[in-house]
Image (cartoon, rainbow, N blue to C red; front, top):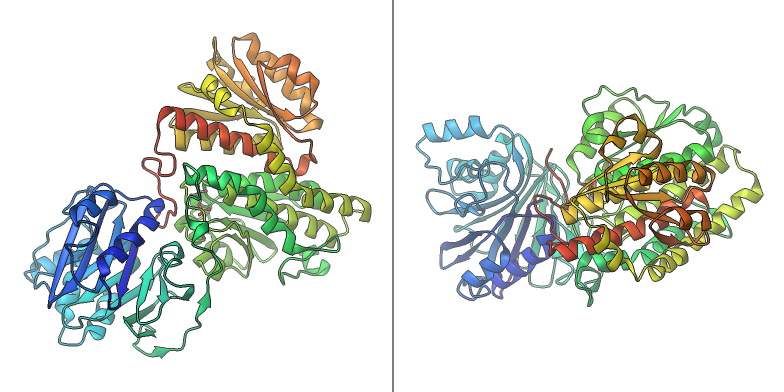
Length: 607
Ligand code: F6R
C-alpha cells in the first residue's frame, strides 16, 4: 500500500527510482510519480495508472536528468487516483518536493490554516499539507524545517523530501509507517521495503518511529525528533535479488506456491534439533505457562485464517483455550486480555495497521505478546515481546501463499513446544509429531506434484458463486480457500462450517452449484460425507479434497483432489495448496491480474 523510494548519488536518479517503484508495485497502487533535482530545479513527472505509463512518459527516466530524487506509488485514500493527486507534491515556491506513505489525520485543520496563510493547493491529498508546511517553516535550514513540520503532523507517515537548496541531500522521516535506509558505496537510498533495495545494497538501517535521516551520496546521518544525532546499527539483509524476481514463472503467485516446500522447511528446520523443538531464544517456564489461562491469536485476512488453523493445533495439543480475533475488531473491543493472557500476533508484512493497533491494546493490558512475522525489522517484530520469524522470504504476489503456510509451520511448532512444556504430551507422541512436522515440506512437494490436473478442474468449477465447506481443521482451510478464490479470480466464494449448512445456507444450493468440500479430518470424515450427500441431493456439483486412498470420498464426490495422508492436526498446510492452485488457475482462465488484484494492497498500513 503506497511505496516510496529515494536515491542520492552521482549517476542518473530517474532510472533507479523507476526500477525501485517497479519492485514496490506488488504493494498495490493506482498512480505513480518521481521528482528529480537538477540545476537548482525540481522536475516532477507523475501519472495515474501503472508505472509502465510513467516509464513511457519519461522514456525510462532518460528525459528526467539529475542524480538526486524521490519516487512514489500511491494507493488513493484522500482524493481520487488522478495525475493531480499523485505524488510527489511540490511547494508553491518550487523549493521542496515530498512523497508520503500513511495518513495525516489532522490534515483538514492544517489545510485550513495553510490556505488562510495564502498557500495554494493543487490536489485533494492530505500529503500536500506537508510540503506547504516545509515552505512555511523554512528559514534557510532544511533540517529544522523538517523537524518543525514533523512536529505538526498527527497520524502515520513515512516521508521522502528533497529541497533545491540542498541539491545532494534526501531527507527521510518515519512515524508509524515503514522506512528503510539503504547504505551503498558513493550512493544511498531509502524505500518502504527492502525488495526495492536488494539489487543495490544488502546493508540497511531500519528507521524507528520519531526518527529522521539526512542522506548524502557518501553519508547517512540519523536523528531523533529533537535533532540529536543517533548511532544506528547497520543490518545485513539476507534476501537475494533472485528471491524478489519471477524466476521463469508466469506470476509471482505461482512461483511462491511452488516455493512452499522450501519456505516451510526454512521455518521448521532451524528450530528442530535432535528431535526437540527450540524456538529461537523464546523461553517460557512451565511455571509461567501455568499462569496463562488463555491464548489470544489476533491478525487480519489470511493471517487470521492461519490463526484459525493454529487454534485447533494449540487446543488439541496443549488443552489451553484459544480465542482467535480479527485485529480490526479486537482493537475496538475493550478485549478481555490481561497479564494471564499469552497473545500471538500474526502478520506476514509486520506492518498491518489494525494488527499493530491490536498488539498495542493487548500489551497495554499487560499481556505477553509473541509476533509471528515474516519481514525482519518490521513494526510488529519490534513491538512484540518476542518474535518468531516465519522465514518465507520476500512475498511479492498480493495474495499470500508461502506467507500463510510458513505461519502454519510456526504455529505448529509453537503448539508442540507448549504442549511439551506443560507436560500434556507423552514422549512417544511428541517424537512422532516432530517427525511428522519434518515430513511436511516433502509432503507439500508431493501435493504440488499430485495436482497437475488442476487447470482442468479449475475450469470446470469456475462459477460466479462457489461454496467451500469443511469441519474443524478443514473449516479453517475452507476459509482460506474461499478468500484466495475471491481475491484473485473475483468469483464469489463463501466458506461454511459444513454442519451449519442446514441452518440456512443450504437454501442457496441448486442445480450445478459448485461446492468444494475439504475432507482431510479423518475423525470427522463421515460427518462431512453426509454433508456432501445433502448438497448433492439438491443438485450441487462437488469437488472434494481429501487424502490419497480415501475410497469413500471417490464414491460420493463428482471430482476429487488428493493430498498425501498426514496427521490431522497439521493437514491444513497440505490441504491449502490445491486450493491456492485452484484459485490461481481460475483467475488465469479469466485473465485476471493475478499478482496485483484490483482494489487490494499487499501491505495494509492504514486502517
Ligand atoms: C490475502 C492476504 C491478506 C493478508 C492480510 C494481513 O491473501 O494476503 O488477507 O493476509 O492483509 O496481512 P499481513 O499478514 O501482512 O498482516
